[in-house]
Length: 449
Image (cartoon, rainbow, N blue to C red; front, side):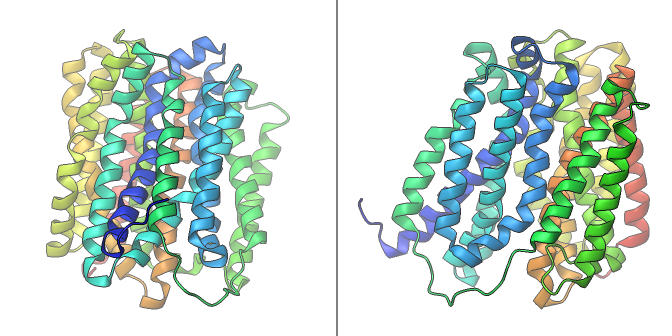
């Protein structure tokens, strides 16, 4: 295997880690446009088809926090190779799925691979680049991920229309193989003493089981009936497990999530803003895509093109959001982003009954313009609101909030749609949620961060 010159290693690591982030984000959005076709081909129920999206997000959210520590314990190259292998094989299995249960199971395994890779990629870039170049590297890393995210609906629509929905999964293994080769050639594991840090397995089990119970009961409630003897006990058990998780984390020396950080109003409000962005993303990318195909009779490719206003502005607005946060602090850019998101969702919901794409277009565009302002400024405030020795934990919580927002958003939107069969209800409910978050942000975010 040819060697890579020392000066070029860090840039190859950046390319590989950016591609990793891109593939993980692509798999968040690429499935939404293909969902009606997948549901029809595999004879899945409506709720089961929603699990194709949400099981990936749920597993990713639940395991990412624990996976972030694994690189420090066993070495980053080992962790990345394990994650790539799991993700690549699971992607193949998704493409060959012959039933809904097969596809949902494979998507869950794919989420485990993504959870292993996601936090490790950020750590590897931080190690590879000197401090003076780290900001540039992280900016490029985020830009690559944003481009992949933006391409998701379009790629999903194109592959579904021209080839088969199965190719939205089969494109992953070649990319994963290329990333693995680059890491093998470019990454040199830094010398380190053996880490004595351990994963908080008790916290992990409580978090994973509690989240799964609550999300499962929420999504299955409309299909099984809220009076079903299974739903209420599942919800109760899930809430109790999550409550036990909080108690355990407060008493653990090395917790999975430092819950005491949420005592800061700024920290809590900014994490809620980050969560809300991912929450509403599920409404736009999944149920927006379904609306375009169901109500406006678009093909998957046309629906992917129609969703471009929601993603195309983001590579351009991200630098503006960062500059605004540096100049004005996090409070006003975050509130501005929430206001744009509220107007965009409300506009789209109000315009939906007319079944005209050009009437909902301004709402989709406003939502797309808001996204960068709900990631960059709040993340900056989260990091600035804690002491230097807690910034690693704070960054991990911000990432967990982002991932959790997607899985909770998908569960709530799926439940609302199963109960009402009305896309307008989903968008207006998301607008109402955004308004609540705006009030919390107004009261909570300190003007000085």
